[in-house]
Image (cartoon, rainbow, N blue to C red; front, side, top):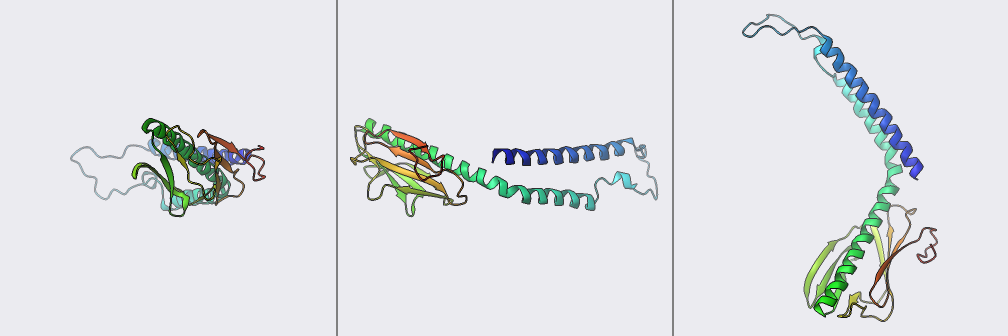
Length: 208
């Protein structure tokens, strides 16, 4: 994937250099034309604008736009897995930060802080609440799927531990690309979160 992405970046770089060189050559020819501007206050009747003074033609602009469009259409499929992987990674870090903040607030306030998913699940956003008050809210991304430990509330008590005796696990995957490794957020009963990645794509985040 990295080699393919670098290949497309190389293609774009070559095209950009070609377009820049063509533009520079075009404007160099324009600057080489003799000055045909009349003195101030004097008008030259019947003077026509030379072709070289008109800049780019509509045909030239259409060709450039067409080339850019074709390259974008070719490169888009190769970039989609990269974008999908970045979305999963960003959502994982956002959840990790929310868990760390919720645990810290629970200890500071000596109260239970709950992380409640929005309607539809964590992929659509979640709220951090304490005593009915919202401490922080986070928008989700429907392009992701986030599965959780069923039937268990995600909450921290005043000691920073999970209110449930069992480990809590969130699994984040991409809906757009099946080749993106799954990421897991694991919270042990003591309340400490950790991130694990299913690099071998076997569905298990704990064996690498």
